[in-house]
Amino acid sequence: MPTLEPWSFALLAMALLLGLVLVALRLRRKSTMPELPTDWALTARPVFTTEEKRLYRQLRDALPHHIVLSKLPLVRFCQPTHGDQVRYWYRLLGSTHVTFAVCSTSGRVLAAIDIEAERGASQRTQQIKQSVLGVCRVRYLRCGPDELPSTADIQALLPLPVLTAKMASVPLPVTQSRERLANTVKSRRQERANLWQDSTFADSRYASLLPPLDPSEETRANGAARPTAPPHR
Image (cartoon, rainbow, N blue to C red; front, top):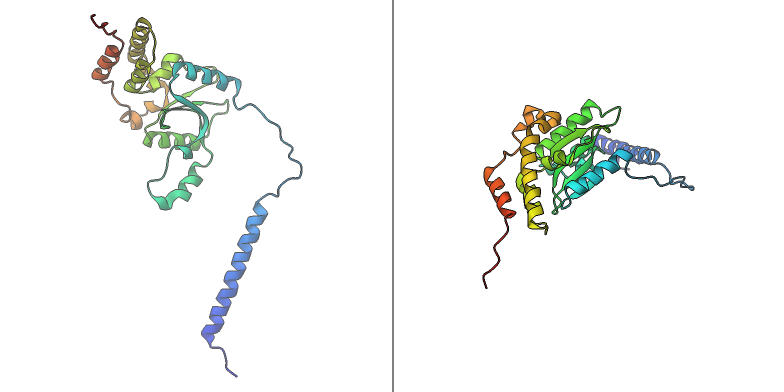
């Protein structure tokens, strides 16, 4: 009768051990997943708080030609540069989100605004937000529930060429369009410095991410509001 070699016993033991590990992992996974309830004791609630509703209306009035998304997770508008780090970044960012994200019509996030709760976010969460928004070149503004940004503050979040290009395409009367563009350029000059001092981008680490005010863009913006002469008959 053939006898088993010592290495055969070792392989058999390893196979049994591996099987036990797999069974233990499966049991552990089942134990961490809650069972489906028989009674779904839930009720609907509003998405916005009172302050968030006010800020949302201000964003829509100030930026009518941009998309405003609420409670947008960071993982929705960033991705790892290395595919083998997806799980790491997903676990790090988790459910961290911004209160509002201002997007272009193509879906790119241009700016983010957070309404801070009374308790405020943890230092770790705030560091994660600032780092992610910094590398993604997303402008960031934090405000309290009783200190919501003005229309000029909101418009100053966007780069001037982006803002004026959108506003110049609005079919408004010539005088109204000219006045609106002029006020935007003026408010940009007045609000630019103190806005970033109040926001998290006052940090010198993010100062290089802010594009300078281009005089040529201002010239084109003002030129877009000039009426064209009617054709001679």
